[in-house]
Image (cartoon, rainbow, N blue to C red; front, side, top):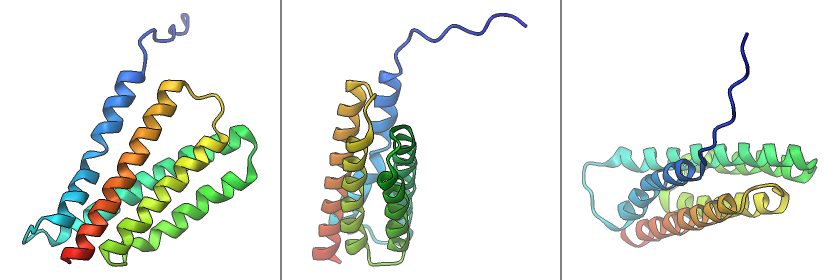
Length: 149
């Protein structure tokens, strides 16, 4: 049988930070897509909205877990409602979808801050920076589509 492996002494902070910021790259593309005239990329908008919804769903799953740990019923319900509100955004014009998604990302971020008590400080700071960056990029892209669409 043997002994269980010792927990890693290497911090997950650098890996989480790298993965988090790499995950922002499609949101940068969303912002650029709103302001640049990229002919022939009609599917790009659909891919970027889908990516945003996938990440939003992932974050709502994280909120669900935090709500379970905190025994917070309202956060459990909110984590589901956020996804259900976001889901139809795949069908609406990109400007409206981007603005609504920005609001939903900020909503998840606020929800996490309300129920998450035992997160390391570095993670809380990372999530704040990522959430605000994503919301700003989504709003920037949406405004670009609104004015250039």
